[in-house]
Amino acid sequence: MKFSIMLLFAIPLFAAVAGCSAGQGGYVAPSILDDPAALGDLQRAKELYKDGRYRDAERLFKKLANTRRYPRNIADEAVFFHGECLFNREEYSDAHKAYRRLLTEMRRSNYFEAAVQREFQIGTGCITGETPGGGSRKFGAGVLEAVLRDSPYGPYSAQARLLLAEYYYDIGRYFDAVRHCDLLITHYAGEREVEPARYLKAMAGYHTLTGNRRDGTQIDSVIESLEEARSLVLAQPDSVRRTQRLTEVEAKIAELREKRVAETYNLAQYFLKNGNRQAALLSLQQVLEYAPDSYYGKLARVEIESLR
Image 1 (cartoon, rainbow, N blue to C red):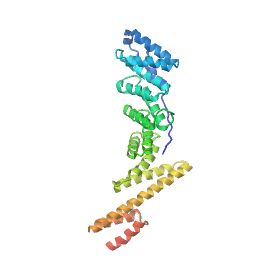
Image 2: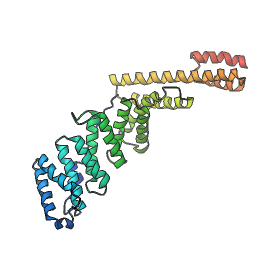
Image 3: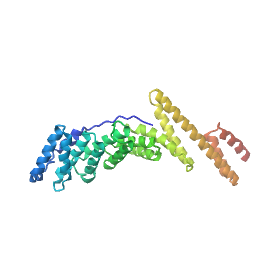
Image 4: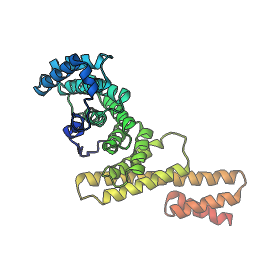
């Protein structure tokens, strides 16, 4: 199941790193002047990058990034732009490694948020399939999980959680889909991703009930989520997709209600078998209240009369 969401990159990358230059916070610290060779390599690499000569620039940035004797303020700038060269050459897997190095080893870098944004772009392109040759959906999911670890409440976290929930739903990892939906709904009230997350949570929750380990409370919770999803679908403009979703949701609600009634009725039979007439009567009354016109409701009505 795919849910389309708009991906907005609210802060252009240039703006994200604009404060990193000298004169706006002094990112090129005075200590850089102690190593004129490094400064020369950094300036040449920047010029190559500006001219679009990414392969040549990448070699110099990589050299600066991997030489430990250089000051940190050279190293993290080199690491970031090493990743930028790879990104612009569409070598997303290697670019991801460069950004990961900055995000894990240089968390105080002025390029931290810009690297998070690039990681979000890489992960999004892969998980949606919008970046041909960029990497598998699994790779994209791993990148987005890393984005959430680096910036759990950042500007891209709500979109990342919804994309991950959709991915986990698609591959049958329904509990993971529900987990991301729950976090999104709980922590991002008012965000546009919340409504599709509520719908997706209901659909994933339905699938978590497959198997033997379930109880009436779980079924009731999922029915409640599905009823909320139905309300969301009904609020959408009339369309073929709306009709399809509404039919799907209502079918699942009807199926779970039938299961809930059947389980309650069977519980009443268990109580009767063990001589607990009071508990059996209570369960049968619940069946009658929940679904009076159903098959089990009619059976319950007859048995209630016989128990009185």
